[in-house]
Every structure is written in structure tokens, then in C-alpha cells.
Image 1 (cartoon, rainbow, N blue to C red):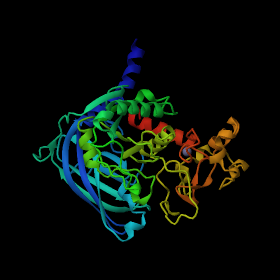
Image 2 (image 1 turned 135 degrees about the vertical axis):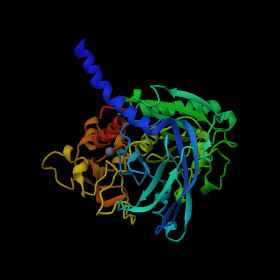
Image 3 (image 1 turned 120 degrees about the horizontal axis):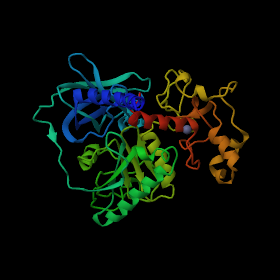
Image 4 (image 1 turned 90 degrees about the horizontal axis):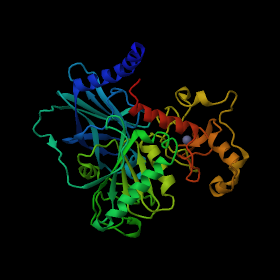
Length: 445
Ligand SMILES: [Zn+2]
């Protein structure tokens, strides 16, 4: 009996310690911070816009000061006197993706952003930092938030209809996903809730999400749009929709995004959220996932399932794209900097990546199996299970990834993060997602 009590205490003590540490500085509410990120390829700046007191805090109450990954940006909550980091998180932005476009060389643009941190009990400093492709600080803002400030706007229930799609546990124990409707007119409400269930099924029928499904909550928010469908500027089709999403982002026809993040968070309102999926009512191929920002997905293209899982891999897992183009002049991953994405490496710090999984004697770069030369994308479904497994699981250091044919390496030949045809995440992506799930939900550090 005594022994059992002791075991129980050993298990409970870390959790209690975390709760105490969290409770010393933070309440159970969410502080939503709206910013403008702006500039061009040369200069970037961050401006504070507005603070809100939101709903219940859905994020982690442990691992407070350490972001899981470096990301392209970080937000820190600091003790103003001691400078101690009380909470930190990392993220990426559409603004930084835009900086890689030709337009950013001759135009300055502004992008909305929303960051959520736990609502402080005492005055704190908030520091938001953006990093360039060399992991150097490109812009930074530090400002005070006093929780007694009368201009912090309280959010109240916005009246939108919500549906629990998956309820696994309490907010502080589970990862809370919110699915928001985009391009669904009032008459499309039932379709949206059906599509939200399909999205949930798509995600949780894929490993490792299947094995860890009891660590996720999913809630759908129905935000009616005036029009059905979303905007397709390339065909001159503009529609009035909840978060004004559109294809042809950065003039790339398949790239569906929304820039209306303040509106998006108004629609989410007080619904606790850690990951946001915008479900766009269209059969046109496209979507996007930005790490700890937003996943946006079409609802009805035949590739719905693999694309959703891929984009959520970006947004939740911080995974990079394992594909590469021909002569891509962009250098998202310069040779002198180790990427922060767990499934890409420039070999600057390979030890921090999947070096432990590579069999001894594996050449770098690892040569492709003959199979690759046969246009895998086209013939994938004709391959045997063994051939597919070889391409998906034979770990090495394969050159080509992160949109670059040279200088960036990926873990396997084919992965969910490389081609839609490959159903499975590779072992490196799989491990990274599991680590991320543990980071959010496991209190036994
Ligand atoms: Zn992978």
C-alpha cells in the first residue's frame, strides 16, 4: 500500500509542480495579441495592434519556457524585472513566405497576425521575434502587457454554432484543434459539419495520429459566408466569405490562403484553440499549412485526405516539404544554417536530426534505389508493398528537399511530406510528430 502511494506521489509531483509554476504567473484565460508584420525582403517590422482577453487557455501548462522547435518566429512572455522567460512558443508566417517572392524585392506589404499566450496575473513583457533564413533576428518588438489595462478587450461568446467532433480530455490535457468554416453559406451548414467530421477521420486514420487520437480534441465552428465556395482570382471568381480566403496566393494558382487572421480569431472567439484548420468549401485542389499558424484545406478535391494530413504535418509537426524542384533560385535553406524543420538537414548540425537512425556506412548523399528513376509519382500504385516500404522506410541522407535539388537532404526517398501518392510519413516525420504530441501532452519531463 505504502509502495503504491509512493508511486502515485512520484507520478503526481511533477504535474503538481508544473501547475504551481503555471499558476504563479498565469490565469486560466487566453491573452490574444494582434500584430501587423510588415516590410519587404530587406527590412521587416512588427507593430502591436490590440490585446484581447479570450476564452479558457487551451495550451500547455508545462515545458513553459522552451518552444518545441525554433520556427521562423517566437513569442516570449517575460518577467519585466528578472527577464525570466515565463512562456514561449514558436511559429511561422505567411509574411515570411511572401519575402521569398519576387514581389517582395520591390514592394512593402503588411500582414495580420495573431498570437495566443496564457493570460498573465501580473504585468509582463511580450517579445515577438522574427528570424530570417539564417536564423538571425530580422525584426523584434518588446512591449508591456498589464493585465489590469482597461483597454484589453474581453471576448465574449460570438454566438456561432459549434460542434464537438472529438472530445478526448480536458483542455489542459489534450491538443485542441478548431475547424472553422470558409465559403459555406447558411444553407451549407450540415455539409460543413459533415466535412469537419471527414477532416477528423482523414487525420485520425493516419499514423501516428491514430495511435494518439485520445490526446486530441476537435471542435468545429460554423461561421456562415455570404457566398458558397471561395475566391479563385485566376478565373475572375471572387466570393464574399467568412475569412476572405483565395487561391492564387503569390500568383501561384494552387496556393489557397487567408490573410484575414484577425477576423479568423474573431470567429473562433472564446473557443479554446491550439491548432486552427480552415475548411474551404471548394473542389479545387489546394491548401496550405503554416507552423503553429493555420492549416487551410479545400473540402472536396479527391486528394482531400492526403493533402490535409500533409498540411497538418506542416502546421502541427513543423515538418518541411521533402520535395525539390528543378533549378530553384530561392534559397529558403542556405548552406550555412541547419533548418529547424526536423525532417530536413543541410548537414550543418545533422546530429540534431536523424543521424541516430542512419545505418553505419550509409553514403552521403545516399544513392537512390533504381526504382526512383521510373517516375514514382505516376507508378506508385503499381509498386509492391515491399518496394513502397523501401522507398518510405530506408533511412539515409538523400539529396533534394525543401524546394532545393542541391544542399538540402531528406530522410527517405518518398514520404507523406514529399508526394501525395505516398500514404505514410517516413520514420523521421513519424518520430517528430510523436515527440510533438508528447511535448504538448506529457507532463513527465
Ligand atoms: Zn518524412
